[in-house]
Length: 409
Ligand code: AMP
Ligand code: MG
Image (cartoon, rainbow, N blue to C red):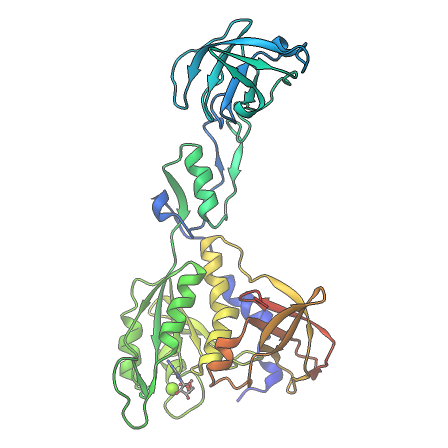
């Protein structure tokens, strides 16, 4: 068995995995399928928005020059010559001494350079009275105010959210070029595993890794295909791995440690190659990376918390790289509020709960740091990174936290 010092560090392992992956192909999707997808190329607009000058208020469009002399004591009267509604295609025009009744979003008539809202004029029969000068451009949205034709409106790598779809739509884009979602085959292994929904027999536990990992793949922007849990046999594992033919990446959990029934490394070695096995991290030491049946495989440990943490460290960045999106979680600095031990020279990813008080984020353990336990994992807001050369984090020290969610309190 290799000594701890001989194992790869978290950074080395991450780098050795990531260099095998690049961005996937582009596909075009309609806007209604584009939310959450990653933009494959920057988009420049074929259109100025708004495409024409229009009114930002319901009111009267006029020539500001006609109102220069207007005052309370000496109001200016303008005849209402035309009505213009939003959507009007008429080539409207006003002449000196007249104005147009105009609605929000309606095109500004030629001859007008300002709009006065209804509430700021006195309406007479067929005319209005203006008692202060209108400024040129008042309540007018000029053409190109929002977007100018040719302007880059969204950059490659943007994860499309509702507001981005509005920008695409407003510039006339019915679809968007996005990166294909990476296909990930998920395989949990273990004779003891049963799917929730079936009764537990003696010695069995529910398979929590499969739903967890499928959701994590989805959240990262990938597409998970979950295989039925494989039994701890060479043939069972081999058949399952062989069936993952159309995956960009195979992610397994369990069977990668040194137990009598842990066959993952043997099966990968027999039908592919082992890139490396085991990393100097806690939790998650028995991580495996390699190729099997021509496909990249990342073998995660079976304990649910170890599987989740190693997914975060080694799988999520791969999926994000394949998507051309930001590979890593945002990191914040947080004040550690309880002492955390880290003996043994591994980089520890402590599951912590965050709070925000007196202008700073604060981190506390989200529960017992036992990698078999799921409840502390579910309570965690992120991972506090404790460097391998630190035997403990003391109260009041500042540490980096990879954030899953920001605290609500
Ligand atoms: P292994 O890596 O196969 O030795 O598994 C380590 C521990 O994780 C054992 O207690 C397993 O029962 C547990 N385990 C493995 N896979 C899963 C899973 N899919 N869901 C829940 N627990 C699991
Ligand atoms: Mg097992």
